[in-house]
Image (cartoon, rainbow, N blue to C red; front, side, top):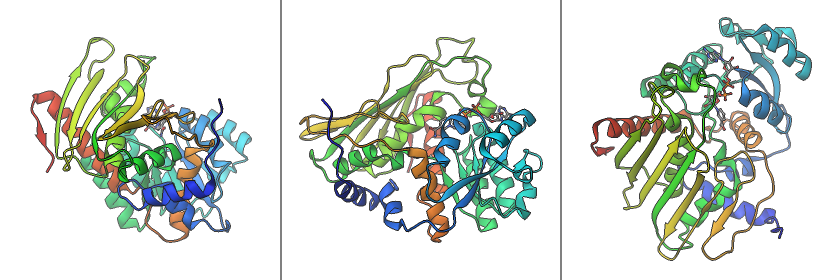
Length: 369
Ligand code: NAD
């Protein structure tokens, strides 16, 4: 049976509550700012791989405040194909070595960094030095130090830095944040969250620590970590973890599967896992005093499914998480407001993920306070 879409009014009410609670930025705050589009900001995608090709470039066509005006690529053949498909002039096509010359190009306001994790700082800092705002894909970088360098570079350039946490703009996640924060099922006691898939090509950068910073934790576990943080609205105080590698040929210097536990100040426990070796885990469940709710699947681009112990979940209409994320960033720039998901949010996750790795390595419970 098809479930009716929620009314716009109900969605706005839901989102306004969620948006009021940090650290979950919420789509509503950006909707509240929505005015008739005036100038659209020019976006340059840096890194024309899978995400840029299949998600970001199509999403840019659906935005109200953004337009695809430039690209940064190391592959001349890709540049030709994108130039033809998206009508990008030669003067707006850059490579990783000449990005700084964007400084004199008014067609580009924002650089969206979509390269492997361990190159985010290099490309963010180059864009900031060219006077561009930066939206950077998750994870923000591979170390706390590099995240801080990115924040410092954007601050020194007087430009905004945001992290591409698309689920902050998905109404299913907003609804779960509302259910948790309003204690609709009573106080939250425990959250289980997990995300994993079976990784293919053994030569890909995701399996190379220098470029990835780690295994599934950096890539997909970060979504489970984010969920436990924004559902509770709290920062964890303790972490313990266990990692395992059963395929030592494929997972030479990164974890294959890792589970971790977080304790939050109110006493809520977060129990999370992620893997590169099996699928079927893409969910979170929030257990509260009088019932439970969650999403399964929870972290996909579309098709998220809500569940509640009282059977009352109402489905949401389709939306493009990436278009909402980019519009929110553009609106923050156009209205001179802080970014909804600033670099500091990405830095917080890096600090926690480094502690998860330390806990797994040492077998000790790590204090995060
Ligand atoms: P990808 O491998 O498909 O693309 C990476 C791009 O970076 C390629 O165009 C490649 O040519 C370029 N590149 C530049 N220098 C490189 C180098 N030294 N080695 C390898 N590639 C290099 O990866 P992707 O899946 O598009 O991921 C890119 C970023 O986006 C990652 O940070 C990833 O975590 C993130 N991502 C986010 C989501 C999301 O849902 N938000 C989804 C997928 C990927």
